[in-house]
Length: 492
Image 1 (tube, rainbow, N blue to C red):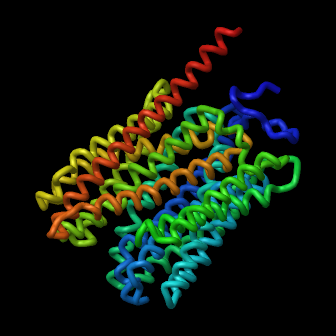
Image 2 (cartoon, rainbow, N blue to C red; image 1 turned 135 degrees about the vertical axis):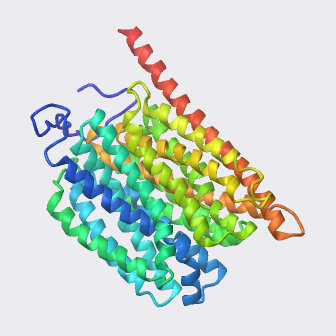
Image 3 (cartoon, rainbow, N blue to C red; image 1 turned 30 degrees about the vertical axis):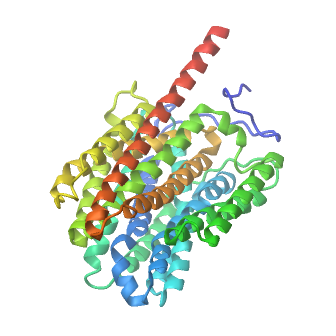
């Protein structure tokens, strides 16, 4: 069997990939029977998971008052779910491919219902933080297996492009609706939104169990449990270092956690090289397609999510904009991204996912640049065009990344590809958020609000630089792929 350029199969023999599925009318490449139900179920669960993910942006004041949480504890309330999510995304994706994507998805949805309910009933900062970490674990199973289920239901082609656009819209929709719903329900009690999310996840668990077909791609050899444990611990240590570092980057605890992450990652690489059925085939990193998809996701987190997820808080701190108002601005950005992701299917076939990624980064950068000086002028209205333009860019990014995630890996490892891509995205967002906070709060000045306004402009320029780097990287990997294809054609 001919291998893809730059891709080496693992040492153990692999089962040949299943042929492309026939659709409901027996047409090769058409969606399989029941594909729309699969997409609807997966999109709804993703929507709920992301609404829960973003809820603390607006429930934080109520939680801190209820728990009596200090400043350092607030960082853990905000970052507990991202920590759990990033730590298990790749692990969940690999296990879903091996043991069943439906099984992983249903288990994750049920786990989300239970852990969100536990968080709603939490009596203290510690218990709520632990519940949020567990919610991240459950969300990892949902997100990683969801793209594998979609890839199985929608074979490559225009139908998959549309399906990935819907999934990207669900992602944007959850990010947009979460803070607004939390702000509205928070007028009653901050716990109310979590009770509703737990109930929604419970209902969707029953629907998913009845609706979704099972699919898997088991590999010969023993499960790579050592690799899973090492990677999960390494990412946990890295994200914990980023969270603790917000109270001071030169503290011994930060250095210890960062050092532990480096050692564990090195051990993970050694374990993967020795495994007969590695969780992550390291040869993928020699593929331009995989590198382009992963680096694109990393720069989305670093430059786009890291900046725009903190920018509403800067508006609140500098010009005193009400929290509900900042939630609506955040909704404007994410809601625009939702609409654009849904319409990405109308792009011409010649406009590849990498073109789409580069344009998304460029538009996000333009939107950020248009916001320069808005806080110093004390005008939130000046940020509205920027949020709209950046929302268009984010919609293109959210539609392109899931396509790249599943198309950059072998067909039978779609969930693993999703896990790797989203791991890079969420690690990037945690790093980007930390960078934005450091840059925005380090500007000198006697007046704190004025200094923060100047710092916000510096943070905007830093984010723009990262976005443009992401655009260049996307195009560079595309060119490498094109050159390789031309060389292969000349050799024939």
